[in-house]
Image (cartoon, rainbow, N blue to C red):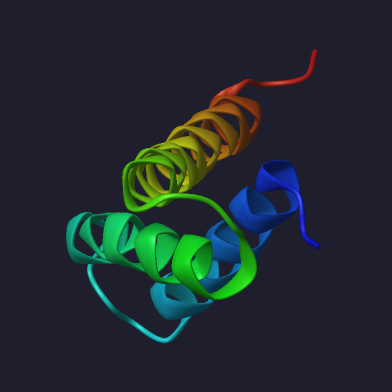
Length: 82
């Protein structure tokens, strides 16, 4: 069985790959929630309610990871080293 954390990384990598292929960042992030739901139904076990909640957590977690990492990289690129 895969863990939720591993599925967050999986969805995050899919979203980042879509962004590299030219899909707009906003649209790619919107795809994270359906991808999280799909991953929860495929890889996790539980009741329908649990799978939906876990899928939303996977999608939102990957969006948060994506935004945080992008903001840190942008901050490092703009910071001038003296």
